[in-house]
Figure 1 (tube, rainbow, N blue to C red):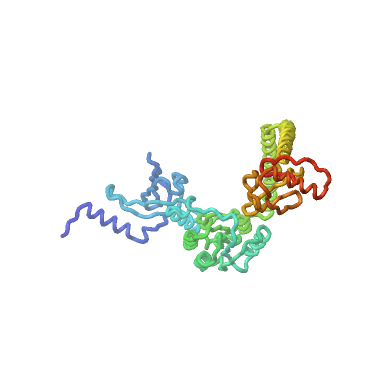
Figure 2 (cartoon, rainbow, N blue to C red):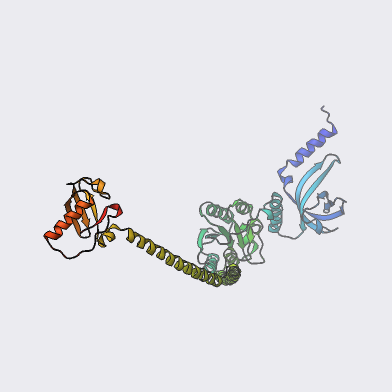
Length: 429
């Protein structure tokens, strides 16, 4: 016979209870008994009926703990565990609701709690909608009024946007997987900037596909921002919690995803007017600054009128001095001209003198010693030159020759001959 320790038996009981599928996901209806709350915030109570009592534990933060009251009948969801240290079997409650709530509501609360624990409802993961989308996708029925309403709103508010429909059924037992498939297809191939998932109003059963886990996870996995627009404003679904933005109605969703063209035009007009005013003010300031700089520059400029007068004064002085200098230079030139004219051989010739040269060497004859009797001479006068031959080389012979000439041919009295001049000048007889 095998003998087991207490720990071995406790471990076997714990493993058997906690691996039973029925006991892992359990709904229990009973009356609250022995309700108490620990200092740590955990709630301990029992669920009983006429025959049995089930020990229950709700850790702090579980949904419905604050609704519990001694003697109330509730529906609780949770799992069975075995506490080996205390040797007790406990019902670990994660959701408690007053008895009488429908099965769908209980399932909804259970799924909400599960998805919330996984982080599907976290606000930090929700994305901002694009301000100016180019393409908007819609997952809804092709025959319902929802798509028609969205078309009208988008056409009125922002006609630039392109609208893409991924049709699906939105009601019935097969609607949830089809909604998820339509959303996945549009997200993968639609090239949309934002997607609206929705349908019109209805009962809880009609809206139930948008409460199913497959739709919630499809919205969570979507790479494109998603707007949930299911039912009317008072309706809430799990799709609303998972989506990036919840809209109270499909028409409201259409207004959320696109801007209002009228408002844009108004804002652009106001911005243009403001920019124009700012530009004009800035231009006025710049003109004022330029004028100030110009005045400053003008004050720094020299007095041109005074400089003109000074230039005129200097000009008059220079002109007067130049005139005097020119007059003096002219007098000097005239004096030099007179002296040059006095030394001019041609002028001397004009007074009756001549130049005697030896034609062979063109040497000027300035002395009788340079000439022998019979030498050829070239005599230059004012209007030409004469050829001559030198006679006797003394003055007496010249006088006798003169006397002979006068006896032989009477001539009119002529002035006495002048003596030879320096430089070879001679007066013709």
